[in-house]
Length: 356
Image 1 (cartoon, rainbow, N blue to C red):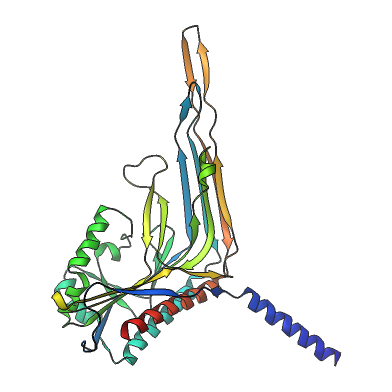
Image 2 (tube, one colour):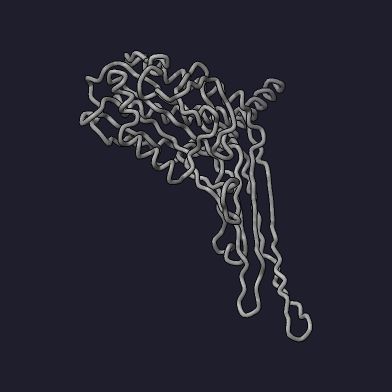
């Protein structure tokens, strides 16, 4: 009896430990907006999945720069602070497997609703894709968006631009990317729908993000202050990364926006359907990454003056830098599972909203 009680107690403790460390997800707060006509019940029962892209953040840097400052002969030289935080323990094979699962279930859901899926060979013959190249999954690679992995599901094929095929396309905020957005709003996927005899065109984009960057404004008053900490979540996420190419100023960063959305396009002209599902609040995930913070602070060295003779003074300005990089311990299996659960919850919510 004592032996049985011991094993029963041990089993209880083990089960408690597993549940206590399991990842937990916050509620799904999603919304579906319509810019054109609302979806109609008599749409053609044909669909084309034009994109199913997943981005997973694994590394982030934060840079803060303060220029030389001086007042009435007292001041400090340039100060730069750089903080970096990466994830240790990410399992790319498991991430690929969960993305494959998400895609397979998405395809199965559309077929269960009675839709016939248009293959990529048919789509490639349209005028919309006349300058596009074909890209096939499975594919997991470093994204052109700094700090992210880009994953395409097994069995999926998409028509993409040459820059996308070469891994050079990114979501950087800027004039040229804004022009691309305007082009999509004017014609874009609705033109593709028209080329495919008014089929429903669907684009899915998911972003799993772990970083929260930024420093205390009060602390930044006295010097350069950079900080990155963990905060795992799925949702549209804006990040900043140091600019590494072209003309740039010291400490300059560029802004990137990683979307989490599902978009529906059907028809063209005045009767076109344009609907976009997104998260009003991110899906926060706990129990996957150890709480970790990397921070750096640099006040800068004081400016000094050296007299040369009686009439000439040399000012000595020092440029200093403070750096700090860390890695946060990550459970690769839990992270992949969290990607699947958060992605599935979001997609299911938006599909229900659109088709109901």
